[in-house]
Image (tube, rainbow, N blue to C red; front, side, top):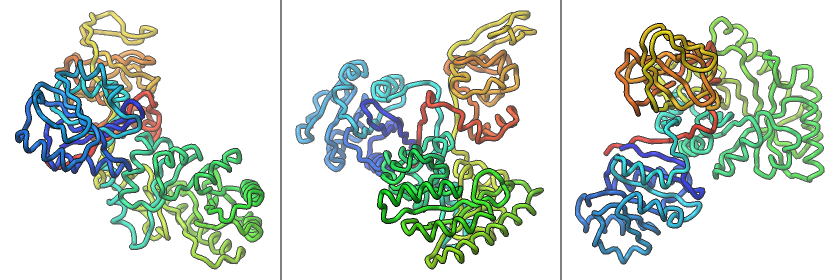
Length: 500
């Protein structure tokens, strides 16, 4: 049983089961999914042309589920008496339901949609879903929970986990992913900006959130939302100290970031004295952790440098505790995704897991599950003769008769123009189709001459069968850049899998 989670109209959430089953197991699984996402299903929309199990079984299930509103679509429901269940609405078709959908669905609520996977069901879903594009990123939340557990098995007992959700959860969506991770008892979240932290708070996330790059104009918002700043310079620390003292804030949790050799952001060894003095003169500060970034934990050729960084880090941590006369426990964290598996001796009190949660890692890739896929469908097929060209600037030269498929995505959706001219390939029905001509703003053309493909077939830029690493190789880049570049024009569809 596949259960999906989507944005719906009227600021609602939509839990979808298109397997057609309406039983106790289905309702429990959908209800648990909604609960994990910090909400409760109040409206049931059921599409079916038959009542499986009989009317009495159906009525018994409804009595246990306690929905506030029930919408029945299909001729099977004619004559069914449901007077005991409050607001019940019947429609014979998706078309008739669509005329009243906006009026029937309570705003800011969660809707369960159950039905058979056919065109009529798609029409019902189209009346409810916020975005019904044929291009989307699918995110497997079960795989995210699985990958988290893989990394936990590599940690010593008591070592905490901080999961990175910056850049829209590495392109997978932050709020829904955060709820799944929170349900799996993650200790901390990390975000890049205060606004990213604010988005998690709006989603109801109560877990501690560390902000890697807070800014002075966002101090007020950061305090109000209980976000924790990473202090990366003496100047920034001084400004935060003055601000919080003026505001008479009683306790301000902070994290110190040390520059141990990456030379990007962070407090340098020579500045330890100044930071320690600021800590002593800022009693409102509560030092939660000390951290640094490893420059090359993913590559064996830099292992010596990684060890050097760890040694510098330990020395800086020791000096800070001593000079600032800190008597309470302070966490240390240095390891990222690659570091967790390659340098277990530096786990300290916490580790930071980023790309690994989403299935990306160079050394333990075989242990992880791929989380997301990005696909669209063929909307037109052209038969192009030899000597013709395809696309802007006539860059797509056709040397022999070709079948050219049109895909409704482009660089406005995050597909790099560097994939133009056959550099990029798309996975269709088990085969690779090269991109023909230039990638346009909204359109890509691909060559399907030697592929058995038709209108409506799915075309994948990456998927479990065609990992994102392949696309990264074509572009000469890293998976991070690809997944975070996919714009918000492309909806994210979340799903879990349960046994029927």
